[in-house]
Length: 293
Image 1: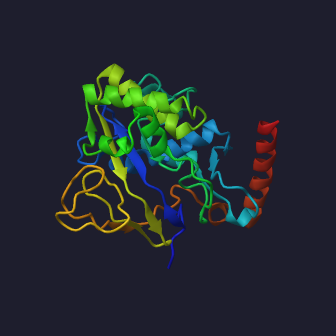
Image 2: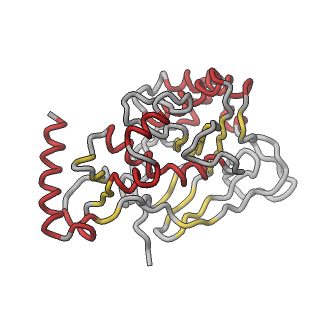
C-alpha cells in the first residue's frame, strides 16, 4: 500500500546540509548531521514556515498545498511542537540570536540550521503529493559559471565536513550564485549558512545526494560515483575512471529507503470530523484571502 508521499516520480540531485552548533533542541554527536537534524527538527521548521507564510490559524498549521476539497486538507496543531520543544517564547529565545539560525527575519523563524537544496531550483519538496513537471533551473550550471570551470561543481563534494578554509571558499561561490537567483529561499538560506559558518568558525556538514525515483512506497537513488556522486550516462565498473573526479571504484548502486511522508501533517477531518473541518477550512480561506490583499 502506498504511503501519502511528499514527492512522487523522479527526484533531482540535492544537497542536504546542517550546521554544527551546540543546541539543546538536537543531538550533534552523529555521523550524518544533516539527516539526523532533519529528523529531529523537521516539525519545528514546518511550524516556523507556517507562521512565516501565514498558514497558521487558531494554532492550526495548514499544509501549503492548494485547497480544493476540505476532506483532503492536512494540518497539525502547534501544541504538538510546543509540547515537545517548549513554547513559542522559549523557541524564540533559543533560536533568535543563534548564529546557526540562517535567514531569520521574524521572531517565529526557528530551526534555520539545516536544509535541502535541489539542483533543479524549480523543484519543491513536500508541497504536492503528485508528480511534478517543471522547467529545470540548473544549480550545477550556475555553480560552474561562478567557478568559471566546467564540471567544477562535482569537485566540491568528496568531503562532507567543511571547516574554516573550505567553508569560506564555499561561501564565496554561493554568494556569487545567489546573486543570480536572489528570490530562491532555499538557495539564499544555504548561502547564508556558508557565510555564517565562515564568519563564526562553525563546521558545515553537506551531503550531495544523487537523483532518484519515488514510487510512493520506496525512494531509490540512482547509480552514481561513490566519491563525487556524478551520474554517468553508462554504468562504471571497477577501474573505469569517473569523468568528474577520476575515482576508479565502481559506481554506488544507490540505496533504497522509505519515501518521505507528509509528517507532521495529518488529514484534518480525522481529527476534527467533517463538519468542524469544513467550518475551519472556510475560516482559513478567509484568513488567507485577507493576508493576500
